[in-house]
Amino acid sequence: MDDSGFFSIQVISNALKVWGLELILFNSPEYQRLGIDPINEKSFICNYKEHWFTVRKLGKQWFNLNSLLMGPELISDTYLALFLAQLQQEGYSIFVVKGDLPDCEADQLLQMIRVQQMQRPKLIGEETAQSRDQRLPRSDVDQAIEVNHPFDGTGMLDEDEENFQRALALSRQEIDMEDEEADLRRAIQLSMQGSRRSELLDSLPQNVPQLPHTSQTDSLSSEELRRRRQAYFEKQQQQLQQQDRTLNLHDKPTLSSSTPEADPGGDMSEEDMLQAAMNMSLESVRNHLNTEEEK
Image (cartoon, rainbow, N blue to C red):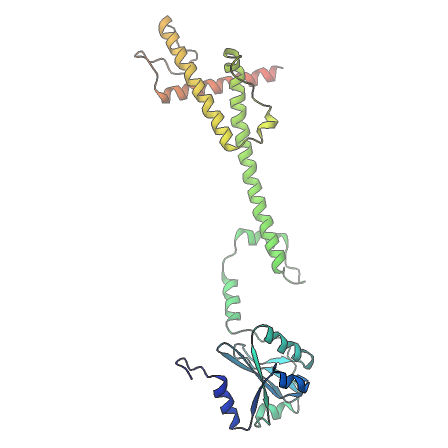
């Protein structure tokens, strides 16, 4: 054995010779030429990497004695060949045990009665993992799935159906968020559109292009909307600066009672100009809405 206590196949073969037993590789050409049906054998030893387990006939029935299971697993005669083929596909090496096996109490008892197994034994640790998952708090998505698909005794949803319901719930949340962003974008666009029509287009009709119809603004990206809004504020600041210079020359009050008075020292601060621009925008939107209601 090595440092971990793992025995090689040679050690196991020599140990079985003490009982007059011999090991033959199941998929070797010599054994395959014999054409022996697996149900006519008595025992198989299976190995994958450092894990060994036995498939043995006790009485008249076959059992999987894998130590990773909670208990022995009953294997029918019709399923035995398929079970061995599946192990080979998973990379297991299978050896046939030839010779008379020593007597054991389980073999003697099962010669008289047959076993009926209603449920396959679980893997060690599988039941613990399931109980831990049941104790975990459920998310809002899981609760929504349960409300939409209550348990009716016909069986729980399979994995594909559960994944589909999760994706559907997440998609609905994203759609709701997109609708809110679209409403906010339309409101900002209407504010820009009303201000440009009532103020900028009246004063600079030859230089300022018309905004597209509201139905077309839905396709504007957030970056395009930000650039247009910035350009609008810059033009508003330029207009305010021109108006401030004109008012200072003629010694007149400001355009609106809601806008701050011109600084007697000269230029307004950037914050004051931005506030004035926003006040003008809101006032123009109110005028535009009043005009539309009168029409």
